[in-house]
Length: 498
Image (cartoon, rainbow, N blue to C red):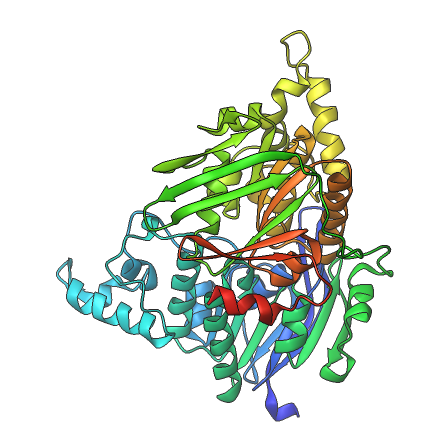
């Protein structure tokens, strides 16, 4: 098998100040292999992948690529050498076209004397998009007009067009809807069939078990175990991830969907061009109401309109008679909202963890109309501890956190406020399995205490595992209602989504 090795990582060590990110990790990548890389947030997955992709240059250990020492100076050089990476967080830049994002750093190839040949550039960019089956985005579209999923697809098209020998995919599928994932999975299988290598980083064990040939488990920067396909067993992998057996249920163990008759939130005849088409729903006290569908079905827009983040053209949302017209009235009525697009809509990246968590709870923290630092810090510390947010301190900027820890901050700020109703749009995106289980158990606990949830998710297992009632959306309409049932399968649901 030695001749099949394309990359050897030997004794890789990396520190960030006092934090040890990797402690002597050894990994061999083989041609024609789909290798899963899994670990809790802070385990070293993204650090390892960023080293082989040329993002991190200062490390100890040795990389051997195609039989020769390998040390790329940046991502561009790594990609030129045949190692491309789709990063977990935002990898596009605003205020330029799709084409300029795809060929960023290479625009000089498409012009002379300082003049850009846009026709040639756009033709090449459309070729890159068509190459992976993207037809609804064109080269001259402005990147800021695209949603998060479509921006991620642009990043995929950019890397794949270079036809690398190793493709690193860092927590990308969680940003994609069902259709986007099918595009990504097709690319993965194509790479494998052409004897290329894929490193798939994901917290979705079902995805890893189904798609990968081998699995490498990291924990606290250490290599725990390499698993072959025959060793893939979900409970065993979970135990390796956390270093112990997970206690308690992962999803709900009951199949009772009976909830209070009391309606706490009403959505009436919501219409919004291209997104919502006469949406009506009731949310009951103590209910987890799921919303599912494909990316353009309107469910993400629905979440924003319910919270007042966006306005509908017709119809309204009300909480016990109070109409929700903006975020302020929503919060005053006891409503909270976790956005899918955390970097743009849910967090202030250049502010501290403390500021991000406390900002929505200032009315709770203040005493006699004054904000005392000790009260604010105690309020924030409680949430940091509950969600095990890994950071140097609560004063660390959110921009320096891993994707999973960013998501914990978003969840923590609304849980700290003790909202009676929460709209959760993909709330566990990029969160490791231990924290995901803790979030699920917290949602179930709060449900049993009378809190109500609207759970918007692209994870069908998450929906069937948690909700009392599930509404499927298609083309801006609610097309089907399911109740919690042990016999309910994902295939039953998908038939009404497509």
